[in-house]
Amino acid sequence: MKKPLILIIAVLVIDQIIKIFIKTHFTIGQEVDLIGQWCRIHFVENKGMAFGMSFGGDFGKFFLTFIRLVASVLIYFYLQKLVKRKDKQIVIYSFALIFAGAVGNIIDSLIYGVMFSESTLFQVATIFPKTGGYAPILFGKVVDMFYFPIVDTIFPTWIPFVGGQPFHFFNAIFNFSDASITIGVVLLIVSAFIKREPIKEDEEKNEENEQIIAKNEETIK
Image (cartoon, rainbow, N blue to C red; front, side, top):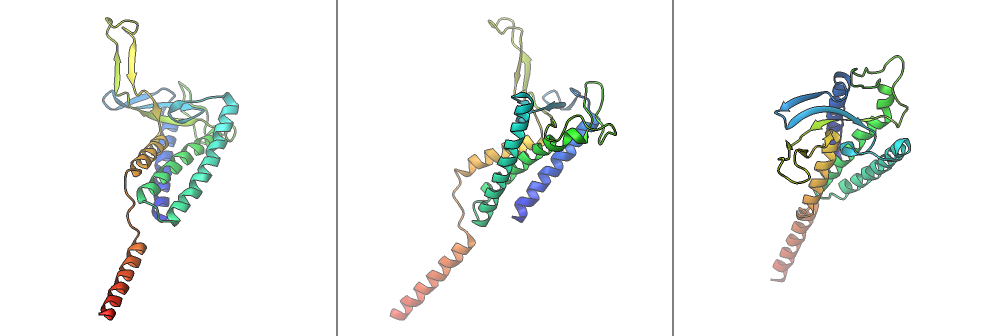
């Protein structure tokens, strides 16, 4: 469990460092180009699911956070089970990434509301404000910042119905935790096509059995 745990801690630390930096240095909607126009930092916050999706107002927010907590606990216990039975490494690391990503966003929901002041279009948030945070525990907003509009253009005017309208391909804004979950899911799918490597203990037992069989054959001769 040591290596998966190191991976989980690394994802959480990187995720929180990025989020805290963005939260305390950017105003809502502020944008910085990283690699041209298709790779940007664009600060937004959301109350709900990954990639800025949300539902159900305050009740939906509370319900989603609760479900995330329960799911994270289940994933953690399942991860321990995978490690104990020495499952494929790619499967173990997939669930480690998914677990880390889920916990990363749970942290935002749990404590960011009491930890920061409100981020606005004109004001950067402060950490541990004297007047208190912007929301109670469980109602903090998830910080998103990565924006990769691979295609950001306008439909030609000659195209019927949509001519002259903007077209964006992959305009979701996400964070490091979202990326961790996505990579974990992709690796999990890939793992279905990879044969399980033989466990060392099984190999040693097979070698012992082969030696015993060889000795028995020599005795018979």
